[in-house]
Amino acid sequence: MRGITIGSAFGIPIRLNWTFLFVLPLFAALIGWDIAQLAGILNNVLDAGIETGALAGEWRPWVLGSAAAIGLFAGVLLHEFGHSLVAIRFGYEIDSISLWLLGGMASFVEIPENWRHEFWIAVAGPFVSVGIGLICYAGFLSFPDTFHAGRFVLGYLAVINVALAVFNMLPAFPMDGGRVLRALLARDRPHARATQLAAEVGKVFAFLMGIVGVFTNWFLILLALFIYVAASGEAQQTAMKSAFEGVTVADIMTPRSELQVVPTDVTAQQLMERMFRERHTGYPVVEDDDLVGLVTLEDARELREVERDAYRVSDIMAASVITVEPGTGAMEAMQLMDSEDIGRLPVVTVDSDFVGLVTRTDLMTAFNIVQSTGNAVAVQKNTPSDTDRAQTRPR
Image (cartoon, rainbow, N blue to C red; front, side):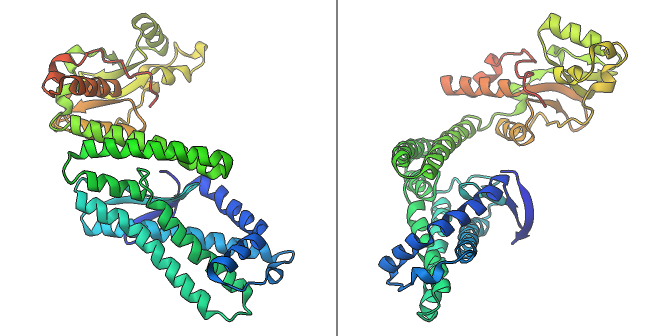
């Protein structure tokens, strides 16, 4: 999840997604508007003895709402550090922790497949939230009964952190409880199968959560949508990783001898005519049989029609090209395409020899073949060789 990096801790970058800049003041305002009702809830739950009149005023509700919202997201951040530090202890790398519209997210470079590791990583976050709740409750008890503002903020944070811990333990994959469920299922099942089962349970919870949200809180609808999409995405990614085990780029790529390429001295107009004639929207660019770039329909479209005869492919191509080696794993190539938002990767040897091209469609076709046949060897015989099946995706 992309965002503004505001710092780091324990070597983990901390990022704020742009949606967080919207949701933080929104939460502060909602708490400020409902401060009397929330104080009443705290009085019932904690016997807080908070006088709502002491929280009133022109500015006091908004100051207290802001303090409670900041404290809430600070707790969410610590919750994610709970996951991350346990993961680091088990040897996993954390890309970043992001705060966004629906809370926090720790981005793992690699998803844990050891069920014990995943279990303890998943429960670490709720444990931290409960610990924060207890600390806030101790602070709440230490304030005198007359300090109503401080008792409200700490009482609110005590209750909300424990409530979030309990909510996160619902078996709605990929929430924490769903990951615990997958870990327990993976004790006697393949990881991919455990993921599929946990994802199905997560989708059911997402559906039920969405229905509840229609009648109660729009935030639950957003959360239900996220759970459904995330569960489906992680299930597919896990299935793809399992299917691609032992499959390399060399098994899937279109070899250099079958590729259609363009030289650097072709004009943009000639390129457009060739694209129209051959129904391709992108080509590797070669010079003296060496790869020097990639050119796409989007590159040519940036020129006005009257300029296309004046520009060569060398003028408009992307000269900085991300490449992979033939021995690169197929799943690694897919992850690279996703992270860089590209649809094709030239395949280059250690000696810089251009030997082929692999596209997103090549990978998806190979995945479908492996799933259908259960045999990764079949990929080499059945993967289509049309080099431009994924060229419609802009680089």
